[in-house]
Length: 411
Image (cartoon, rainbow, N blue to C red):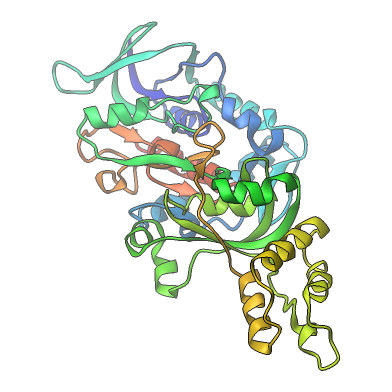
């Protein structure tokens, strides 16, 4: 069966690309091995789909080629997707930090994409497993071998996603296909994922599971890792990537928005650091001439910024390790430790709990304007399968939309 375009993967990027191509009069086949489209969309944002972020910009994305995302993001902005949301009458709201959510349900975003695909006459087939993609015998186009038969096409779009949330059907097929056609793949790893305490830290903190507090978090990477992972704008600023959001203690380690953000920059063996009292000089009252200088006074001061049990634990751990230096210098050291709680996680919760995959198809082998492979003309890679990963809060959806439109405009 002959098509102009076959899109592999009926997630956010795949569906968006399919109808953009269909609008141009292309005959499009959209395939997915799952039984329904948009499975990850449906669980996103707690079921309300954080479909974009109004502050999305290239500096909010990780890649070993940090300039790559600029073109697509500039040509399809959050405002463009909001216009599509409004066209379909979907009510939405800004939650925090520019995050836009549906008022009702993530199902509305899936319905939007299905409606646009139907209008563009995209043929969608679910429950179809792709076994191989190969060049056509005459070298013009491709043949896609599937459990439903073979499909010939001029162009193939790979929108198969990453390895995150395998319970929803995530596989490494896109990476395998890229390698078959000569592409390098940046080693995939879990991103936006809870971190696991070391054994010692687990004993110290995990009985406080459920406690949450606002922090400023950052990952402490070595020089080589910084060069690879941190966007150019951050390198020029000569500062670490920092996120001011909530930290949550779990029964195994740390989670919450601040930790998820930091996890994408963390690499095994590295450290993470948290300012537990951002914007506060907690122990300043102890410097007053008439103030008490002891652990009780420190605890009283700390309760103003931390949950009571966490404040008590922080003080007790230090009191057990040190009799206390209540000189001005000693108090300053205590203050510094509070603003630089440094941990070396044993690992992360892995792809099973990760919201995204960091790494993917090397973007240096893709055209930044069209997402087309430089090694296999006619093949395109979009969305999470590509080595572009956004922050928590709608950024990854914006990359899905933008990369999809870039490819859909030319396939």
